[in-house]
Length: 221
Image 1 (spheres, rainbow, N blue to C red):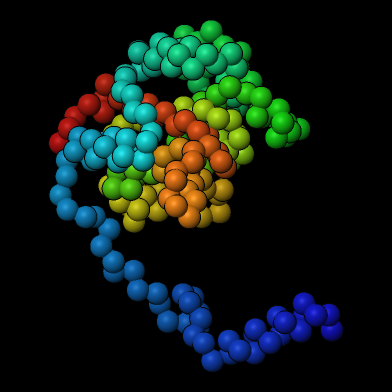
Image 2 (cartoon, one colour; image 1 turned 30 degrees about the vertical axis):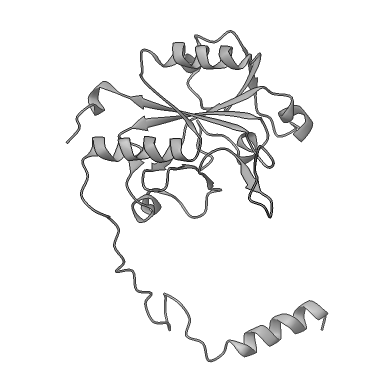
């Protein structure tokens, strides 16, 4: 028996009298926690998201579908971006107003090549208002996790109010647990023992969020 097998055998032995979780032979896990916190309209939930995103030092913009390409083009120009990394399923029209080179993500792309890209543009799976969090699940318009962890500038488009929920418990049913989930609350940041904040250590230094309102979603009630 290897050392690994011996350790696992001891773990199994230690757990013989511990009830298993949900499923045959185990007690059900209580899930009666509160999912909705307070009462808000859809418009108020979007406003809370914008407020908390800004509190986390993300830069928030708003536009509709018609104005999206121009806004993206302006934001990339203000950054001086010459290249933008895009997931394979991103709508081509989103970068139609940008004078940049679109860089496709490839399996063979190295961290050095990703680091050389000026910006990355993605959509998202869901946005959580109460925590100011964006969740990406590697969908077609989000791409692989690594493309949002290396470039210094991340532009993320959130469709409102359809992709916005109030709380984490409301978000979880929308997400598949077997997908690679990336939870983003503001730009990458850390602090030392004296609480001096440093941004960009392990991810984008700048996070810009575009709240994209579709005509059919403008109802606020």
